[in-house]
Image (cartoon, rainbow, N blue to C red):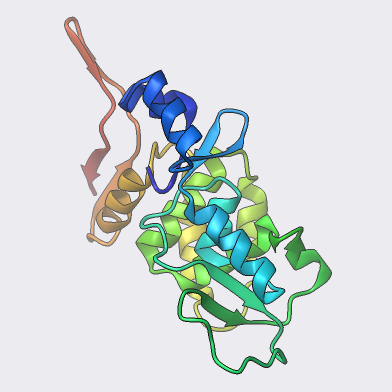
Length: 211
């Protein structure tokens, strides 16, 4: 589920008692009403506090409740470019950037900056998983396209390609990654969550057509 999930999804995959036990033991964190995540989100917040930085990149995506292709092995934290460290901590992926006031929202990069960073730093499939999840969560598609349009520097063409391909209909990172792979096949065009029905069954697989 990309490191984050709704309570409904967790209960459907396990049971109410197992979800409650996982939350009580700390193996699953409650981000907000009905929204849960792996403890890596809490680890990222702790690391950001410790380094006087902000949660960023994939860790920030999870902080905002967005699913990712693969949860990061180490929390991502961004600090100012002039920050001096005797040695970089081995348990944190430290990044250096001059963030403006609009780039930070509390202990994490803002939603806009988080999307920009993820679309720039991740491969196409991983970036698409984050973008799809952000749209599912209510992030404006027009805003995503504007962020991509204004992007400059390394990876800008890929940022715009991911933004154009992003689709809120993708149910999870697995579907996003599968669609990302399909989009690289010449002449293949895919649409997520197309309903297929007959008198006895119903399904919603990814559909495809050959151009």
